[in-house]
Image (cartoon, rainbow, N blue to C red):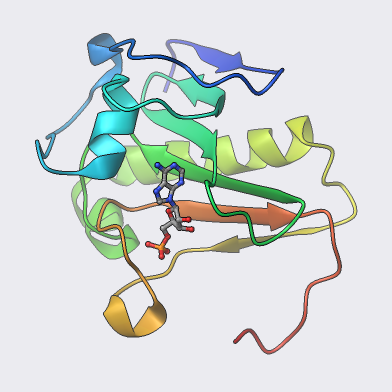
Length: 140
Ligand code: AMP
């Protein structure tokens, strides 16, 4: 991994700043999360590394709901693991770092919706990091 890891606090949305230097793989010009990764669309960024970005979900399902993405475009976690295993590991490391940063030591849930039937709506792999409340099981 190497490079940098940077946490952000205060919750202000980043406006239009491109971090092209951090791009490690392909980019899809029509992808919403690629645009957030480059700063073309603002996101409420809370953490970033050379290969990952974490930002608050625009429609939170828990007191803490953060999306952690690779900067490079892969449609889902299976293709990320198959094609960019180092980035997949970096993504999981980033999830752990954000959970610690957000004070989720009581517990948290990490969800990769994969495929339309599982409610994936943005086809750029993202981990939902959910915490701050008691979670139900089974999930809906
Ligand atoms: P999924 O349904 O698993 O693909 O999750 C996509 C998530 O992206 C949803 O939870 C949305 O609320 C979230 N989302 C969509 N647009 C934005 C945005 N501009 N900024 C932050 N989160 C977003």
